[in-house]
Image (cartoon, rainbow, N blue to C red):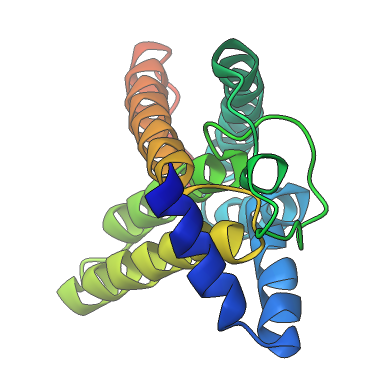
Length: 183
C-alpha cells in the first residue's frame, strides 16, 4: 500500500487548489447528483430502463457498503499523515463506491448507445467518453485522498459487473413478461 500512498502523495503535491475544487465537483457525478442526471438522460430514451437504472444504482450502493464493512480497509488519510482528506470522507476505503457507481453508469449509457444508435461513430465515441468519465472519477478519488488505486479498480470492476448482470436481467425479464422496453 505504500506505493499506492506515494501515488496519492504525488497526485496531491501536483494538484492546484483549482484542480482540487474541480475534482470535488466532478466526483459528485458518481453520487446522488449522478443518479438524477443519468436517470433523466436514460428516461428520455427509455422510461422503464431509467427505473431499472435507479434500482441498480441503489443495489450497487448497498452492496458496496456491505463489502466495505467486511473488508474494513482504512482510508489513505487515516493511515498516512502525508495524505490529505480533501474529499471530507469518513468510513472505510475498499471498494470505492464512486468508482463502482461510475462503472455501472458507464455500462448503462453504453447500452443506450448500442440500443438506439446504428452509428459506429456514436457507439465508439460513447465508449470513449464513458471510459474517460470512469477514469476521471477514479482519479478524483485518489487526488482527493480518499481512495487507493486498488480501491478504485475494484470499485469499477464491481460496478461494471453489476451493470452488465443487471442489464442482462432487464432484457430477460422484459422478454419473459412480454413487455417491450419503451422507446
